[in-house]
View 1 (tube, rainbow, N blue to C red):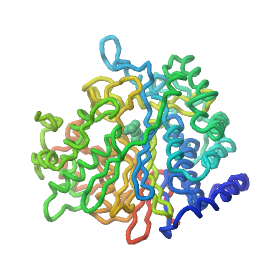
View 2 (cartoon, rainbow, N blue to C red; view 1 turned 90 degrees about the vertical axis):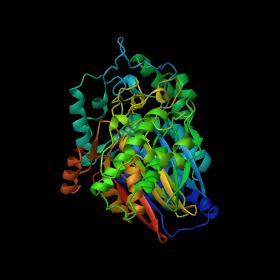
View 3 (cartoon, rainbow, N blue to C red; view 1 turned 180 degrees about the horizontal axis):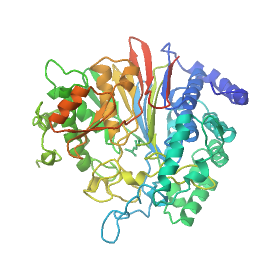
View 4 (cartoon, helix red, strand yellow; view 1 turned 45 degrees about the vertical axis):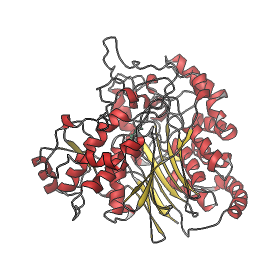
Length: 556
Ligand code: DON
């Protein structure tokens, strides 16, 4: 455990608080579990749970720690979604970034109307107004039991005194700096991170000072006062558009999660502005409607083809109908209605690829994010996905405040028919408007049976998140895999465009790959995602973190 002597003070504060919170709760489960993207977040979440905090307390503390120890995706300069099942009820904290008030539909187009390369992806213009601190604050106000300052303190300590840099993080930073040096982008990432070396201590004093303001003043410690001033001044000095008024106006929102029956379970998942909840429900339900009666072997040709066919239809709908529900009327119920999905899947053939161009949105007849999963001993669960979009976000650190800003503006559709970095298309539903949330694929999801938590799942990976999530559910339910098998078995992804391309992890059977190529698919072997999953079976918890990352899952 990373908590050494210098953390003893913090722990004693927590212990005093606990005595009260433990008395207030009835223990239900013998176990708790965390599945986290690094050891610092894992150890912190565990300490908070062992000391009697609930899953939401542990999630808040972990989110702030990740802002220090997982700079490629953990953040206070980005946003995310926290799905909560607590005391038998679901809640969804939407802390997605918003477009600044000076944003407009064509802000990434040149005079000829072409998308300006990289403007929405790197540098000062790429960021939406960050939502993470407001999201944690709202989650805490609604569901927290320990004091806010106690939950932020572990992150303060790790920023102030430093943490030991994992070799995988050190080499990722080195590769990023080398890659960015070749691009014509104006970022200051290297000034802050080039001294992070493998197995060495790395301190972030400016970030520590920002976290202290958040610890002491809560949401206002970020969106008002000193931090807001630093951000706004930094923006105006470098030609950015986020203002103090934008920061003050930001609000995290509590939304009703999507909930739908599937295969004897209730799938509790992410509503818009996530596209993921609707997508995984469409995927799982169309799979039930179309799979042959005798079932399909895991990762066989037939299985991958069928799920790719469904993916074509899911992504055609995503591009047309999904956007921020506060700005665009998303036909949520219609998109997952049984008769619609029956009709939608009726054109699928089990052995032949359908023509990409013929797959249109169906209703009208008329790569770095991070995820973690937590279950506490009372059976409450948090599934949290958070992002600054690409690894290290916009590559811009707010000088004086020490945190990386997101490049989430690229998740809007800059122009109809032009793909974003994840190859996603969009139109009216996801065009840029001031204060609007950009469409997301983040899909934190919880599987329930009789209102009890059976599985907590989620992943990073841009549009591939949706495939990681629905495949993890099929792995657990249809193929009865352990949590480790669920996260480590090879996954695949098809999203309509590019035409008939299936991206997949290493490890698919070579005969399966050949057979899919013979059907005219193009196979593209490139890993995606970093899953952290908890499964409950027969009263026992099982947790798994994907082996390719630096995650740590424990049941205790
Ligand atoms: O919200 C989204 O869909 C994207 N900004 C997520 C980015 C992501 O997962 C990058 N990770 N590899």
